[in-house]
Length: 425
Image (cartoon, rainbow, N blue to C red; front, side, top):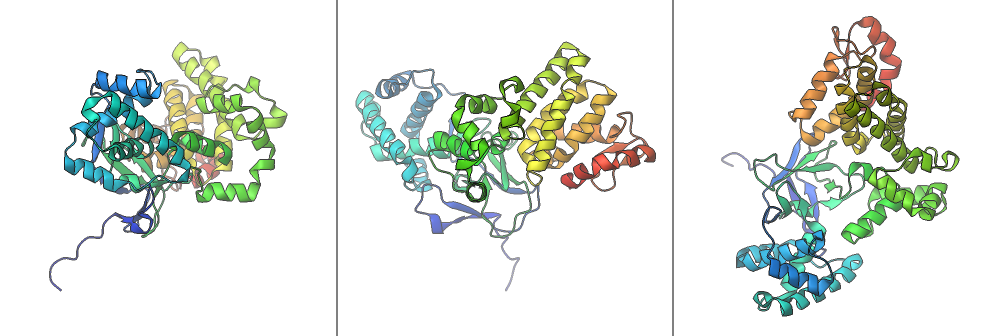
């Protein structure tokens, strides 16, 4: 055997599921948390800065009943315009990406097919195109496109990464090196051959009970989530009979407010909701509102009135999701930005205690060189995690994140820091 052995692909498509609308993607080798698993240029990009053909948009609105200002109408018109301008090779590549939609999306597929046929009758340039091909492209963008910095993009390999409510990779843009590009990073160690899963939900939504997650995925992506986490929750907790599920089913307006981040504690019965996801969302919404408002208005007392609330929220996160702190990493970053801006010793202590467990998760998602992550790490090292003053002794030897001004403060802080230190590792 001569020459160097070919390097194994970082990930590969699992052809065993090639007949479904979303096939599987597997790791070609083992990955450490934070490693790049996949980088890819878009196969087809719906550029958000490009003007939508007004005549085509009018035809879509007439056929669908949508109004021109609606994102759905503009997206469908944009995809149909792309199909008109794409060459035969690009259209063929897009056809190869997707099989037929599953049963949950069958109704949507019928609607899209009828819509496309109606638009073809109203817009002559589309009349000669294959209706099935057009409908297939629209369905692909509606169900499998990734939202990037440049617009909505289809990726030949990346779109094979299916959803899980307990993902092992994180999707982000390629930081400008390729507009609209894709980067998957590992948010935990991944074994060779392991199925790769991203989340179609945001972190704060992943903290919701399965009944809420399934409703969101059904409404947005037209499928019933059967990931391992949803199935396990249903089996172990019997959601149909739990008090939390009953509250969520009886008061959908609370769920909507919780997901929007507008739910207030005053709207809740603490005896019924205490300790539940819906209560935790209210803790954070109230806390962040006071914290941000206090910082913006220069009102230290208002900002400090948030400390108990945000502390209670992050204690709930660490207790409920000790292995999935990345669910709340963006919320930790929001709180850190406000607390660090206060230049207050009490705020500095809280920032160290709340944000230290999330730094590793943020670095796994966005990279250790991300400007905000660099700033957070430097700040945590330079402020004592016990008294908030300037750190002089150095950082904790275990987590290497939190700084201390001396041995006395480090010993005094250990009891409180220990669970956070362990979680950060």
